[in-house]
Amino acid sequence: MREGTNQISIYTAQQDKLLDSACGICTNQNCLIQKNIHTPNIGKLVKARKEIKCKKGQQFIMEGASVTGLFFLLSGKVKVLRTGLHGKEQIVRFATPGEIIGHRGFGTEETYPISAIALVDCTLCYFSKELLQETLRETPSLTYDFMLFYANELNRSEIRVKSLSQMTVRERVIDTLLYINRKFGQTNGYFSLLLSRREYADYAGTTEEQVIRMFSILKKEGLLITKGKRIGISNITLLKKEISEHNFYLDS
Image (cartoon, rainbow, N blue to C red; front, top):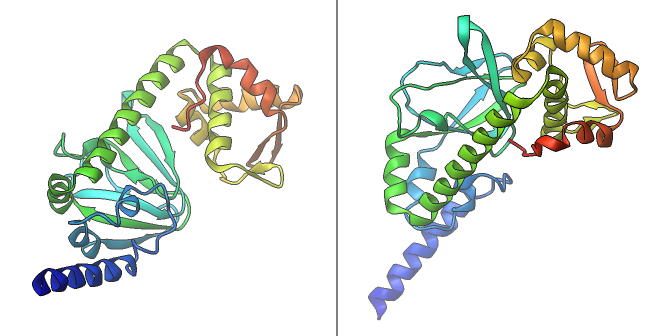
């Protein structure tokens, strides 16, 4: 009985130490590691966590580089992109705190299929591939959460590909504006994230010239406001109505 009590005491002490760690006090409720912080066998992974600081404009994942691990965004904003036809960059998505970056190459490929660049100063939590794979084999709840995460990612990707293939240029630009609004919101009437017209085009899958032209049209129609590089939506309801038939309002 005494031996069992000692084991419980040791386990409690270890858990208390774990909860006092950076992952234990993390406020990113969407982070899968933080969500499973009370799970046995995760202590080794949390202890080996590395914190990486990235300056605005710094690239921390290079497309084609060997997969070494996964990045969890602790703070900041990131754009994830890949090279398309004729070397043209296409923005796959934007990441916010709590999201995973680099998962598309994890466990299935030897190289990252995407690049990732900090849009503002960022802090990243890095977990090595080997240790994360070991933890997943030992921790069913974490593995289950990762399975649901990948299933959701696949569903979003398939819906997006289908929707964009059926959208006009105007609809793709509107979809991009609504996505940025869902992802980052607006401050003082303008998107919190400052993007170039080219970045809007790279996400919408069109040209910079078409984006500039469409912004001008939407502004004249009273659906959009601009101030330099800053963009704001003045009538979200009408923009949603324009692409409602595509039924694509996922926060992907």
